[in-house]
Length: 279
Image (cartoon, rainbow, N blue to C red; front, side, top):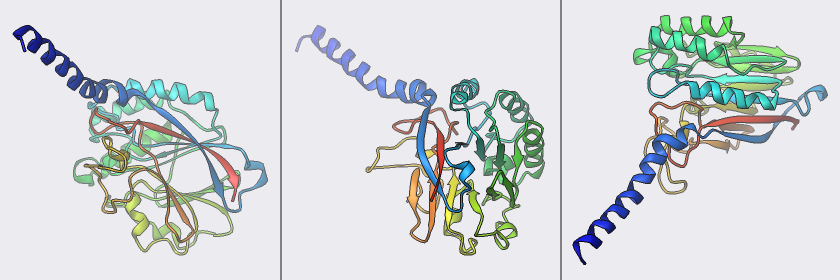
């Protein structure tokens, strides 16, 4: 091989090798997927049949990526004209005053449901070591002022849909039995729970129905069926998508719209668009 041919081959290999890095850094993190699927809910009132419930999770507003991407994604999401919107935690990345200030700007352009908009906190909303109550309280104030009804181990019935919201598993305020001890199984119930590991805790009191989670980001980088190197849960089955828990509970894990770090490979950011149906 001549020197010229060698340099040409080296250049070609460099381009081929650099593309996956560029793709996972600059393309996929900003290529949102709107996942559309049905959500069959027990005891759903007839008037809610066909209504749209949108799940948005893990915004991670902060300095790790350009959060204007979130606003652009919200603008695209408006086309689905959701009736309900649920935000399932991790609104910010570090819980700093800068994060809180930027969150106000993002939520000023956020997606809201015609019938109701609800949210729960994630571990990042509790700041350093997941213990900063000042950060979580400020985020709740920002969200409430923005029109999001925050649920901290609470439930609320909205137009016949009973939404149950857990505080985060890793936070000082985790206390799901505060609400699960007296939920009504005859209602059309839906649980919002940031960390799917809660599904393995003895806190459900016979609940049967859907649980909407986030937290994992789908691993952010993975080769499906081969490897998911980073997954912040104890139960490695909890990656993303629909999981049948085999006891009457169904889990859906959203892959997140934001990122802990600006890198994704074969795990596009997600906004989930559910159509409510009777189970």
